Image (tube, rainbow, N blue to C red):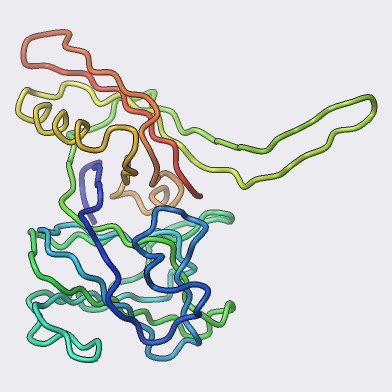
Length: 259
């Protein structure tokens, strides 16, 4: 497991090919930040997708899937693929569990893989093994990959948010509800960041701003919380404070796009 809290903004990723897919839910949705647009397989046999990403990658997240704790994922990378098969892989994760620990409905699976060191290769193949999945298919909303920005830790007192966009109209003796699913958020204070760490985080924030989604994993090492507390969404607020020389306090707030 990754030992430190981290932020990850996806490098440019495009869909290359897949084994089987539903025409209305194609593989290109895996590079789309609209979390309602999923990729869905046909059946459960021989399921894989190949993505194209030429940037260095040390962390990969497969987000909002229907994979269970008993399911596995295998990730391979190489410069060439033939009919979906990676030729001479430069990276092979082996079989890794879709997740470990606790996950309760309505939270969806976030599979986070630490590659151990940056890997740079053009094609990335993802194999999914999900025998007997009650949905009869594998589905996921997004694949995020790139180089993470780690932070030393989070101060006590950070907040887990519950966001809901449901519209409620009230009147005498009634309420009409236009219901939307709840979404998670995180508001935290990252304290005692030195100048070197702050400079990197500052540059990262200048790149993502409020427009580009980021993956924020406040406790990626904790199997009892990682599925509930990890959010993929947009920065809604941030504040940089410099209380002392070579000491920065940063307060980011991330609103997730989906549970």
